[in-house]
Image (cartoon, rainbow, N blue to C red; front, side, top):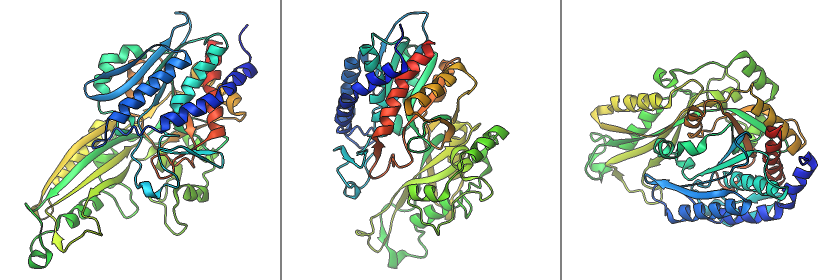
Length: 461
């Protein structure tokens, strides 16, 4: 006889203390895969993840390496050729910490405060890694999962998955599935589960303006000699209007408008501007950016926007009275549904290279690119996931979009055209993923673990 909902939840909850310890152990590893960081912790994180998956009961657990990519981790348990196959996705790499001194507690020493676990990667996305392992372990306590299960834990999601094409060419056959569960999204609010069906795309471009071979005295040369930092500021400012909305038509090419059903969903979610401002720490007197005639959720989930991710400049503390020889910046462009990431990236590169303020040498270099993603909602696995979320959280789930990006999803959907992509939240609006004092709501995380386990039963029928 198949386990009941109560028995599945009890099995998950019985393993919660172990799951919590496993999560904290993973979060102590500074697995930052960005250029310039030590890659040894990323490899350590991959090995620790593999050990966790083996303990959960997965078979054939292995590190997938090659092509210079940080290691991913794969494992599976095969039940029966006639049973559905679910692929569980998360990532074990994390964002840099930013200013360590600005954290309330050390970013790689997980610390609980007021029902939340604080630390880099606690929410994004080591909570997803451990949720998958916890669901599998619970089913092994119940006699084994009722469906075939595969797990893929990526090691370079936070840097835009630059080795994705080579990875799928080598390992794509391992990822065939009927449903793909991605535990790397944000719930609508604490206590309210969400199924995300829409993600923005993402590209990044580095731009350099070179003026001189070396710095020169700003008093002796200032005026006739252009300042590259001022030129960079003007170059970037020319990409948007006074509201921050993009003004370069090529950067909006292919963008589709929301459907009437999507607009009804946006309105039904009842966007709370005060809450949004509080979550973002945005002052009440600051106007919201973007086209003022568009709903805020449409701008977050369905509109392209530009962010200056970084600028190389002398620090204010160490600034001297000199004109710098070079200015460099990194720009991030989020893309709305229907847009092509590689085309948008090239359009941004072409536009920047075509600008030559005062005849200066401008060089734009393309970086990562990931397409926007949409999942088809009218499918049995989607209905199964919604049912599992309601049982796991004890609350009705909502359908929502996300302004974030997961580059793997588009190619994975192309490789599995009949698979349903099920995007779950382990974060909430207070998680501050990528920011200072990132945190995980522990009770919601327990509900997410329950929901993944319950999905197996829903898919089995």
